[in-house]
Image (cartoon, rainbow, N blue to C red; front, side, top):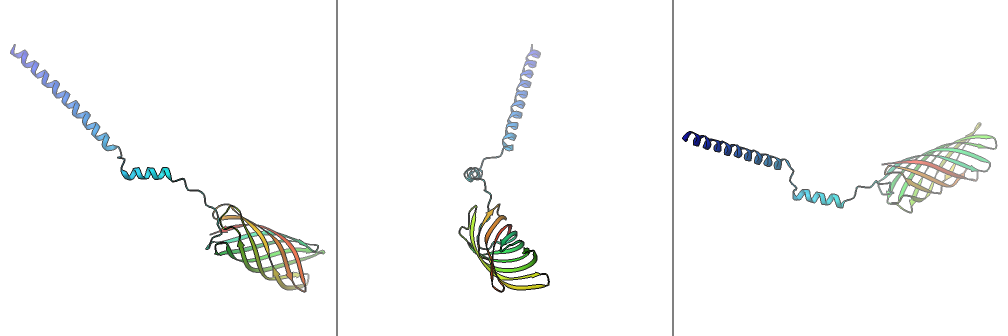
Length: 206
């Protein structure tokens, strides 16, 4: 009788110990899981709010703002006085203020006039004034002048050059533009001769 009673007590103690171990194990697992989860701090909450309110940054495009500097290779077609010319030029443009730039240009051309082949080289400098300095299309006017050297057969001649014009700049992104320009090409050499030129090129900007 006493032996059976003792066995019953031992059995209950074992059950209690097993139950206690199970409870402690489950409690420790819950504590470890809570530690593993990142806490949502006030700082995190503020960052989440800012991320929701701030839109994704948009792609920026070239603007005619002070300090920009660019290199512009271009091709031109020139016509007039029974002459046709194809001209390659390399220009440099520095924005000296918002909407205004200093322009320098060096060009070489091959001309055909009255069955005579003429090669020429020219250097010019001047200004471009932009009507808009921050838009997807930037119109401008140009005034530039310089010197031109031309040679044909066994003769050569140096004269003055005037390059007024109007143009458009089409920004592709912040660093590349497509440029278009048109206007008279006025040469002073033993008189005044006026041609019409159309120029298309690219701009690479810093």
